[in-house]
Amino acid sequence: MNAPVTTLSGDWIEIGALEDIPRQGARVVKTASGCIAVFRTADDSVFALDDRCPHKGGPLSQGIVHGNSVTCPLHNWVISLETGMAQGADEGSTAATAARVEDGRIYLARTALAQRVA
Image 1 (tube, rainbow, N blue to C red):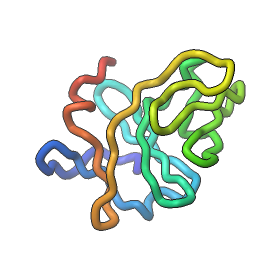
Image 2 (cartoon, rainbow, N blue to C red):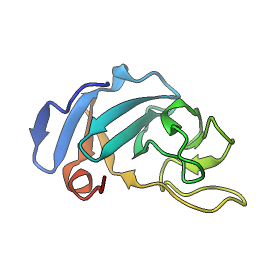
Image 3 (cartoon, rainbow, N blue to C red):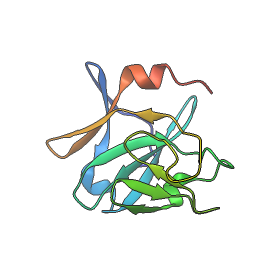
């Protein structure tokens, strides 16, 4: 999924197929204002977060997906895929982008992408 965005549809941008992401895995979508990690959970839910841990900027796309959370590969911070908030005693957050799946295709909210700051 390391490809440019290809299709526009209303307020949503199609970024690829659900099958492009393994269950409990992630892929990165490159945008003009930074990379977004798109995660697929074991139950085929899809979430999108900035690909930066709020702790030290670790690549969340390389973390371990468990339930609706991802564990950063650098220092084991656990981040909610739903909100981007650090869990447990850790504090901080990374930006979440609305994502949805329709007919096996993944879409990200165009307005959220437009509001991202590099």
